[in-house]
Every structure is written in structure tokens, then in C-alpha cells.
Length: 285
Image 1 (cartoon, rainbow, N blue to C red):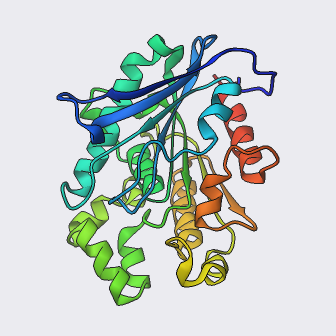
Image 2: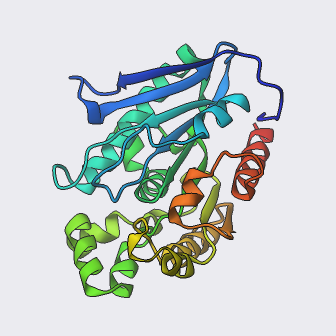
């Protein structure tokens, strides 16, 4: 169980571990654990960046918060569009999960108690891999190893819906990234949600007022995703319809950047909700 205790164990970082050979930076991950890690839950984190940028080092304080509370934290890299397709990116994620599963015990983790989480583009990948079992099946794994799924402020859980709702410039960008209508549907998490698939419980975090947060940042702000609330509700509704436990938490006073950057900080409400979710899931082990 994840519990708040004084952190006495020595933290460790294992950087640049290859999860695919030959060794290449986009196919590496970092593992954070402690000297006392033993049979701990494993959290795999997928960074954001529009599927075109970002790095596994973009984790702020999250790794140490998770380690302190009794988890092994794995942050992964993956290849980018246009060098690869969106499907290949999801395959990268599955390969990183496979590596994390195979090597979990070496870092004090439990290979059968894994959580998948990600922000923005990483949130959409998280939801997709947690619902479309073909990616893990290709790696010889089942969705059953994933005990929980936490997408954070994603805007592509239903890609056709997203393309239909945004202005032409953004619609064209999504079409470039996700392909034709059939591909857009296949790369949408909502397409694959069904009963009896071992889809894990979801905690869906999103900015409470993404449009307002975008207006406050203005042109100098970071890229914004003003549909994350609508997309989050769409995902939750699909999960609920299949009987998959799903909680949605709209984070007030946050924008797309701060929701991610402040996740793990003391006193952060989204962080509190996240660890309550993890504790609840782990109590059922």
C-alpha cells in the first residue's frame, strides 16, 4: 500500500536504460527507486509534447514523491511523428511496459502490479494502451498486469470527435498525426472499451476550466488543449458504459502545464486524489 511515511531509504536513479536494442535515445527509460524497494508497485509514466517532442526527464518532482510513498517510478521515451506513425508510438509504449515488467523485480518492483500514467499526448497513449489490448498482447502481456490507468489532461481519447470540434488548422494537424478516418477510430481509446477485457480502473485528471486557463495564458503561454474536459467526460462515459470503474477529477486553478508540473507537490489537490485512487486500488490486491 502507498502510505505517507518518513523517507529514510536512499533514492536511486538509473538513467538511459534501453528497452529496445540496438540502443537509441528514444528507446530508453529512467528508473527511480530506493535502497529499500521490495515488491513495490511500478508506475510507468509517459511524457507529453504533442507526439512530436518532450523527454523522459520532464517529470518535475513526481518520481521522488512516488518513491517516497513506496513505488518504483519508470519514465519512458518514445519515437516521434513524423518519423514514425502513432501506432508505432503506442507499440513503443508497450515495449517499454514489457521491459518494465521483465525487470521490475531487479529494481524492487512487483511485475504484476503496474500503473500506467501520462500527461497530454502521454495521456492519450495511456488511455489507448490501457483499453486496446493488442499492444500488450503483441508483447506477450495482458491488460491484467495494469492495476490502474491515470491519463492527465489528454485531448485525443476520441479522435474523430476532436477533429470535428476544433478549428480547421488544428483539425488538419490531428489528421496529419492520426491518419484517415479508420486510423483515427482505431487510435481512439473509446473505440476499444468493452466489458470482459480486464481494462483497469481509471482516474482521469483534467483542467477544470481549460478554455479559461488558455485565455489567461494568452499567446505567450504554453500550448493549450481547450477540449480536455469534454474529452475526459467522453472517456469516462464510455468506461462507465462498460462497467469499468472511472473517476474524473477536474482540477481547479490549473492550466495544462501546471496540472502536470505540480503533480506530486505537497498540498496539491490533484496529487491527493491520485494517491487516494492508488491506495484504494492497492487495498484490493
